Length: 253
Image (cartoon, rainbow, N blue to C red; front, side, top):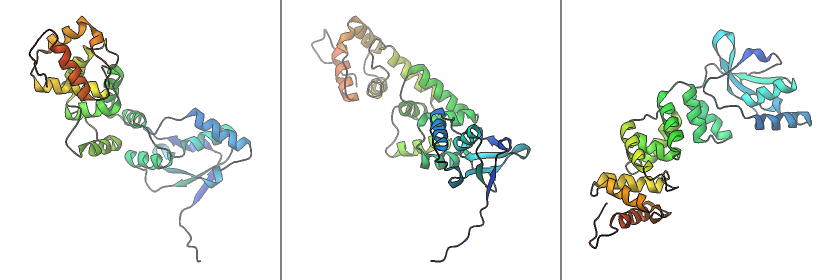
């Protein structure tokens, strides 16, 4: 078999100051660096086999597109770092995709990445998640659609936008209104879970009951509200609470 030579050149250096961390790249994991350093010290130095990927940056330095953990490990062990220079820097979303192929990025990684890059909608998303303690997936739907779920097939598109840095808080005010109404049940430990939020948003959307009365009846005996596995269970439970003391059923959704 004939092997075709590549025009890609691998360089090597111990002058680490020529490299620059790219703003927005994932935060460095001390645990991962410790593992690489330990392997190097134990005679298993794989740095020559896995060059880092860099691109020309500001001030004549090289921006690290991939390999920041290997670079830091080389610095700590004073080993040579091997690198390949790209003609142009990877876009942030491509960098995230490339890194996630090697080690899956978590939603939190994408949020931190785009916050550092200065995209305000990701800062608002982060504030919303931290303030109310809701899952990121629920916050995404609330802030983008104004409800806890978009149209059929839209969820995948939303996740794609989120990963690419294109997510926007299109319905901030509506999302806050819904979650604040859910928060009125905070004496119930699962008030900020997806099934409960879905149930409350459906009740608010139907507008068939006096919501203040529902809250008051809940506060009269919080033990009435029980843990449920899905939104339908909460809807039934909340309707029972609302109808306590009434002989004729009053629908709430």
